[in-house]
Length: 440
Image 1 (cartoon, one colour):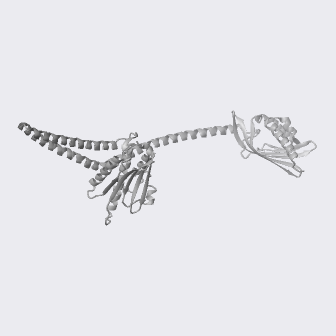
Image 2 (cartoon, one colour):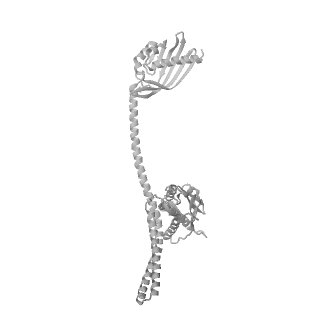
Image 3 (cartoon, one colour):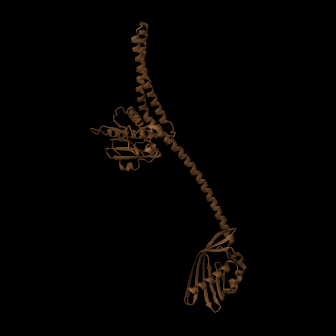
């Protein structure tokens, strides 16, 4: 006998009909497909029947457990003919309906042997097995065990959910602590940069204050002379003295405003950024911080000297940026440049002249701000990490490692880029690129 297409179709029709009767509690149809010499072996010790009658009796007693409550999913059915007998192997996932839910029960393996005779196709042997049978004696399926397992599973899921919620709360608390710490570190970096400016600010304020004091003293003398000339009635001399006093007052006013601008700049640098962009003179900002940073370093180290070069493109005009943030970036780059040339100077290289250059350029689609130095340069290993938070090459206590990281984030927030070009032993140049869209 060969397994022709027609025979295979006939066998599968019988097999599917028998399965339908088994899963729906149809005892009569179920029994009609069993041979008189049928034998059945099941998963439990009690399921070992030597004849058709005992098998049908067991099914009749337990049919209610299956009727409408069982499904086979993910089935793989194979047919094979051996010595005129048809062997069927059936692998499937068994699901059972319990408490209004379909629950996975187990992997089932079914082996059936069918004989073709004058009476038609009949089952002569069947073996059902489940690797993890939950059925007890007198049961086809172990509903109670399935229910208990579902309860245990739900409890486990509930416990896991509670654990995850607790973990989430812990992570949220940790994130809040990290944000608070980050805010403190950023403020610390801002105050550190302000500290770098303090000496330079004092130096810059001293100059206009000296002018104010000198011209005030001079006006005091001129007013005394004016009183004398008034008594004499010398009109021509009175007019000349008055003109001199007015000129001096204008100078006092000019230098007073200069000192006021320096103080306002210091306050602006120290306060929390508003995040609001406003038209800003980038050239004036860069020039201001270049001089303040230089005099700040000079105040700490009287032996330090460096050449400062500027090349500002007057065609840039005002640029819409957050002045406090952009100022911090420029100050950080300039301070680092002075630090680099100072470190190289300490090596006492013959003929070395420390030089820091700051330039701006309207490059069409972008605005360039360059800060360069002729220090020792930066190794490639350091360049790869230079914008990482907390990375610094300075000795402990001399840097937080946040300056360049903050600068990178600030420029990114403006839609720009910050790049570094360096040659070891010769110096480094930091390039800030701002899109023209920020230009006013």
